[in-house]
Length: 407
Image (cartoon, rainbow, N blue to C red):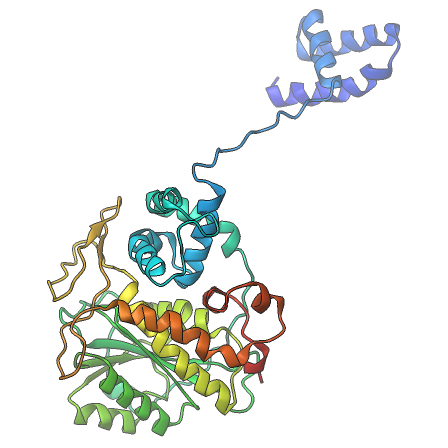
């Protein structure tokens, strides 16, 4: 007889054995011995153990290695960093702490911040950061709606670029996409964000436009050419009609920009830009609907600040074996325990007069000082605005947008 069968029989007889008289208990013992083959003493002990309620042994749990103060400041640094994952935040932690201390966001002796807390933050591994931030990350989020409409006019004449194709070795080849700020409905006109990401350096450019009309798309591309500090040599887009049209192809041809496209319904062909759509556009622009001039203006004041933080103060993880060529102002790369090389936050060498050739703390100062002023006019009576510093509230990922921005 199997162990599970004996356990089931013991549990069945134990219920009657609990309240039975001495004579009946003797008869029950005889039946259990006959069925299970146990000795009488073993059967009596098993029935007695089954009758007694099992005590629940309290579990002490895993002791916390870091102090509550360090965990609290970890959540604050994580919110200001834009909600970076543990792998990114562990690498960028020294740069972020230095910058936040220099600009008065973290002051020694204020709110229990001290050298010991800083040492604990620097000692945290990527796994520890993700574990301690799990509660802060467990928040609901609205979902977006896809607005991509296939553009079949020139699709057959544009080269297809698939996932796994060799990555270009020089900066300048960008993946491009648009993100709709339509909220829960596609009715009417709503703002769109044009998002570009360089495949080599990870450089991002984001700008908001009124709609997907070709004149607005080309104006956004012109702003990208004028803003990005190195030439755009290639543009990879999906099959949306906002990019697959004669106007964009002619614009690219006049500037000697090579245009490719992904395969239909294969998002992995544009994995880099799809990732940026989520943790850049949706994290800072949310899933709300923006269809007013005021909202469009605020978005275009927000995106340069967000781009500065991503381009200057966020590390970029490169695949194993991808050698990053040396460039001016490159921070020393560090190696993670998994052997993945990380490149520091840097600006490629300027190719036009007046462009910065290396990263500067003034960029973070601009972000820390200008962002509260930008959205100061949007303060509401929400408790989140009253009890939390404006910068930390606005940069907290998956937060809710001020009601004045929602049409």
